[in-house]
Image 1 (cartoon, rainbow, N blue to C red):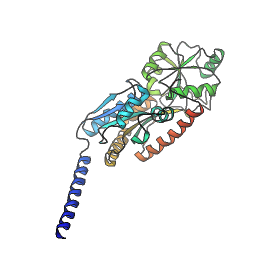
Image 2: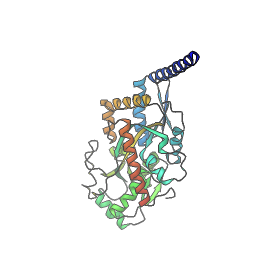
Image 3: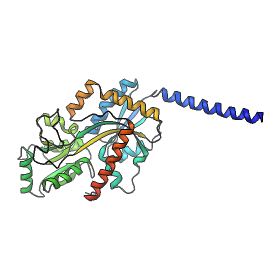
Image 4: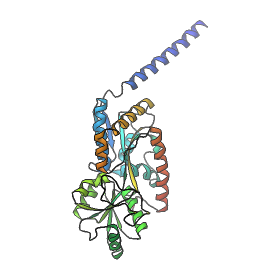
Length: 326
């Protein structure tokens, strides 16, 4: 009986020791560099927002946060990599909304599931802006719609791939305006911006961070922002309602995720750091310049938002019969 009691006490002590070690390990987090995998090539909105937070996370933690761009595969290369990574907080994902919300609805045998990831924090929300090439003979949305109606099937809109925000934005714009723009998929926002500036495509529905510099430099023409109110970064750009298309309201988001099973103390520490960074004047100013909106959300609030987005996008994809072949 005495031996059993000693064994039991030994087991309790061992369990307590293991718990204390885990607690200390989490309390010391991070004690080495963190990899932030970005689910897009360099130059696009996901990359810009990811690098903005990575820079300040490095300062906040005193450990380097290394940005690793893993573009391609419609975001699935990066997403699957993080979904299958060790859940210790050292491999994180800066995700683009359409990859997270659209891919599970479009791809039957997806190599990851939203359940494989846990939300850490919202990076930024970006109301979409309708931009056209300088060579297009239109200076406002009304004139562009008239031009498109006069040239059905002859004008193109670019996207970052089937099911991307830019793709669905083009589908919804076609429906809302009663026009027939042809979808041209690219592999990222950077290539889209480059060909839009070069006049290889006529239009794109994009996140402001991906095209803000080109708007300001006059390399492209911004026709409207798909939001209820004008953005302070672009006060000269009318809302879609002001431009004559009130039914077209559309945005994208960039959020940070960790592998499912990452200890809550680590998720909470990352979330607290992200929210602290989002309140820095320099980050608020940068976000405003990019045309994005910052959100002070807990991991739970972010997860709820992501779940709701998944339902909305799944419905959009079904109703519009969007596939990876488009």
